[in-house]
Image (cartoon, rainbow, N blue to C red; front, top):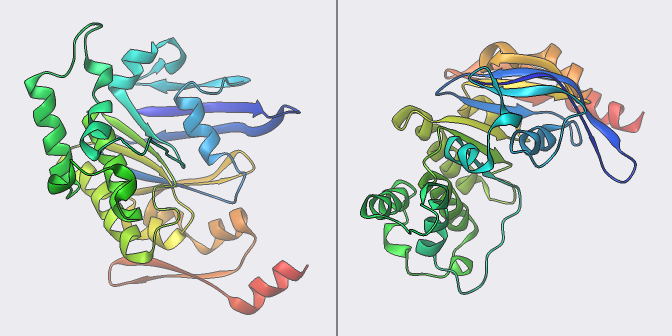
Length: 265
């Protein structure tokens, strides 16, 4: 299990506090969505897990051990990370991009083995891009490109996958197809997925668990149907909503008049 224990993190020109005592646990083989207002620390938490930011206090643990004591290469074998924005050279093909995901397992002077290459092909098949390995990544559509990056993450073969807004800038059809793929990783491959999402209804549809954040702290965490409630949404976002079940899923709808009043005040 990956866990955060009263984690506080500051960064930026003035050392602004972004996380302030953030605690949460992320269950094995489940899809957990991190939700909350902009600037509440969702992306900061993922960057801290990866060691890109140092905590002021508190810690992140993996299987009960402080993650700060795990070497970078060893950490890459356990945790894969896909940031919000991804760039690659124009000449890089989809197949070459996916191969980058296996570097943490290579020996110092070696390259991919036959088993690695099979894993790369399996990753492309999983995301539905088997016939596109030869194409430049930058020639793909937005949804295809995001699936290519997820294939690279799969090729890393880590137990835990961190995704920072994986469906940002995608249209509705691709949002659903990418998140269906992500959810299937927990079901079919036994992965633990932690993803930043902005849309509460997408979180309600696809996530097993939800962590709701505000101002660097946990408002609520646990199974989706217990966490996305009218009270918790109000506490995090300052808006009144109707939260109800329909066809076995949670639906969250803002109350329009009260939302407009809140924005005007």
